[in-house]
Every structure is written in C-alpha cells, then in structure tokens.
View: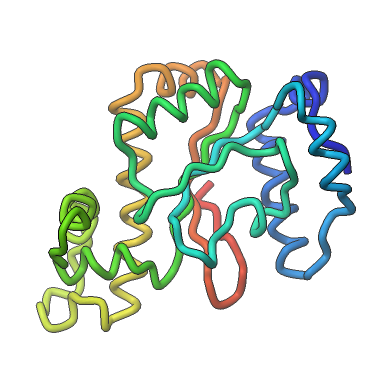
Length: 209
C-alpha cells in the first residue's frame, strides 16, 4: 500500500476517511495488516505529507492510533495527551491538520480502563497532573449514576468507562465551541468530527457515528 499523495488525498471524503479507519481497525482485530513497505513510504513522504484524518487519543501505551487503525506513514495526524481532551495548542494543531494540511476527519478516541479517567474519578492530586485531572473532572460530574459515592471511583470500571465515553463527548463539544475554524468546516460539510472508544481487551474501536 502506497503513502497518500495530493491526488489520493483529494479523493477522500469525510465518509470515505471514516470507512478507511473502520476497515483498518477490522484488519487490526483480525491481525491482517495491509501490505506496506514503510521504508518506501519514508521516501514517498520525504517531500510532503497528505494525511486524511486527524486523531486525538490518549498517551496510553496500548492505544497507538497508527496501529489500531492499521495506518502507515503519512496517513494520519496523531495528537496524544493523557485523557484526550483539548486545549488551545491541541485545537491549533487540529486546525492546521484540517484547514491547512487537508485532513477531513477529526476523531476523538477514548479508551476503556483509562488511567487519566481513573485519576479524575478519584480526584487525584499530584504536581502538574492536578491541572490535567481538573480538565477531565467535568466528565465525572456529568455521569449521574451511580449516586452512591462509594461506587464513583476508579475501582468501578463500568463507571470509569462511562466517564471515558462522556469525556469524549465533552471534548467534541469543546472542539465545536472553541474552534470557529473547525465548527465552520463541519457546518460546510468539509470535515466530520466523530467520537470513538477503543476497547483495550478486544482491540475493537466503537465509533459514535
């Protein structure tokens, strides 16, 4: 499989880009990698890159977007931060990826058993991690069940995963509210912004769209 070129990137629609990621995840789950010569792709992308998707995911070592979607060099912009939330710098990176570099799909990818989400559920406080956790805690408050405080912590994995899903949804809301560039592109049909959850026990990605 060749690296994307300006010509192949131009053929990608948001729907086609989403389908490419879904197909890639199916290959990943079935341990059937696309046939790629990565060194050839290094050469092919040495003078330019033409990715089709921008993916925001967690730093978790088990959730590499390139691997779980079976993509090669030059295929996706990968933005990673614990808890997959957005700030000004990440929004700027997304705007670059979509408006200037031609990607037409933004994916916010959360995952099960997320350590950052567990920290938010437990209201952890530790150095600079405290400020990061504070950005995720609104998702904890948004999940109303269970009401028993003894069950609203990292030991309850069902609760953790519900918060992780809500965090993805809130992140998408923040993208639309805080980035006029991306929200206008979405309204004009130039891009899609979608959420997804990766299951660390199966390798499956469940898209919300």
